[in-house]
Length: 578
Image 1 (cartoon, rainbow, N blue to C red):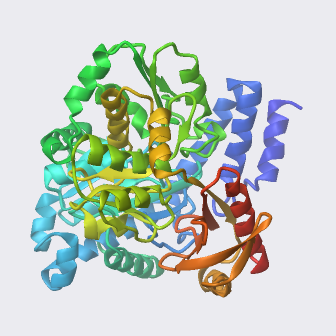
Image 2 (cartoon, one colour):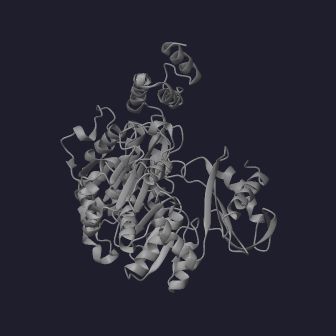
C-alpha cells in the first residue's frame, strides 16, 4: 500500500473530516508515530500536517470543551483542541482574574490568594510558562491576552518546569502563576495549573471558585475579560510581557535557603565536576527539563553528564511520558555500561515535577526515595522535624519517623494537602514521584530531588541502591506497588460504586494470595485504605486527573505485593467496576 493510500485508510479509521469536532486527530497521530518508528522519517511530514489541523482547532474552536472544566488535584486537564483551546483557556483565565476582583471585598479569599487587593495582584503579576506540549505557546498567548486586558503584569518564562515556575513566584514576589501542562499525561492532553502567591498548588476553596466561574463563563459563551475578536499570537511575540530567566530564580532560591535545608548547590556541583568516579544520566523524555539540564549543572563539559531523550518531540515518540519502571530502562542500561563507581540515574516527566531514580541496578521510586531523603536530612544533615507523605505512599517513612521520635503528617493525595506543614516538614512527598523539602517551594520539584540524590551519593560515598538496602536492613523492608484501571463510570455514579467498598471494614477477613488477612484499620480520607494485621495494606481511590480508578498496595515481603494487587482487582471486580 502506498503512503497516500495508507493516509486515506487512516483518515477513515480516525474519522478525519471537514469538521474539527468529530475528527480524532490524535488517533491519527498515534498511528503515524507508529509508522515513523517502524518505517522511518518519511512519515514526519504527515505528522506535521495533522498537527497543523490541531493548531487550527486550538485557534478556531468555538465549541464548549467536550468535558466540563474542572480543577482536580493538580489543575485542569483535557484534550488538546477539543477541551483546551484559545477560547476555553481564555475563559478559565478570566475566571482566575475574577478571583482577584473578589480580593477587595472578601477577606477570606484575599487571604487564600496571598494578596490584599486587586491592584496589588495586578502589580505583582503572574508568572507564565508551559511545558513542551503542542500548542503551549499559543495557549500562553491566550492567557496573556486576558491578563493584560485586565491590567496584570505578565512575567513570561516560556517553556519551563513546574518547580522552576514555583520558585519564580517566590523570588519575584508574583501574585500567582499559570503553567500550561498536563504533567505526565499522554500526548493528546493539555493542562492548566494555577498556583497562588504561596507558590504551591491552590487551595480547594480557590480551585472550586475557578471551576464554578469557568463553567458559568463557558455556558454564557463570552466574558468582557476575553477579547476573542482579536487575533491571538504567541506570548513570546508580544511586547507587553516581561521575559525573565526562570531557572536563575530557582538557583537563587536554593542558594538563599541552604542554611534551612542543608543542600549546598554549588558544593554539590563542584564535587561532581572533579569526581571522576561519578556519572549522572538524566532522561527528560523530550519534556521541558531538557532545556535546563546543562544550565542546572552550570554548563559543565563532561562525558559523565549524560542526557537522554533531550530533543523536542511533542509526540513523546508514542509513549506515556511518565517516570515508570518501563520508561526508566534506558537510563538503567546506560548506567550499567559505565565504568564509574558511583552512578546516579533519573527520569523526569514533561513538566519536571516528578522524578524516579536508579543506580543502574536498582530502581528507586519516590516511595523509597522520599524516605531516603528524610533519613538523609535528619541523620546526615542534622535537621530535626517531621515528615509529610500522602496516604497512598509507603509506610517506610512512617517507620523512620517513629524511630526518630518525630511526627508523620499523612493527608490525602495531592501536593496542596501539605499546606498545613509547609515550613515544618523536612520532606514532603507522594507516591507518584513528587518531592520537595523544607526551605524550598511548596510545589513538587524534580530538580531538588536530583540535587538530593547527588548529595546523598557524594556525602555517603555509596550508591542509592546500597543506601536503600542499609535503611531497609535497619528499619525493615517495604514493597509498594500501584496500578490503575480505566472505568466508564464517573461523577456520582463512580462515587456510588466505590461506596460499596465500605463492606471491607475493621475486623473483616480478606483473602490475599493463599492466606486470610484481617483488616485492622481503615483510613477513608481519600478513597479507602485497608491496613491488614501483618502491616501490609491496599488502597483504592478514583483518579483526580484521568477516567481511572487507582489502587495502591504495600507488602512487607517481596512476593506478597502481587497477591495484594490481585486482591485489589478482586474487590473492584466484586463491586462491578471491572
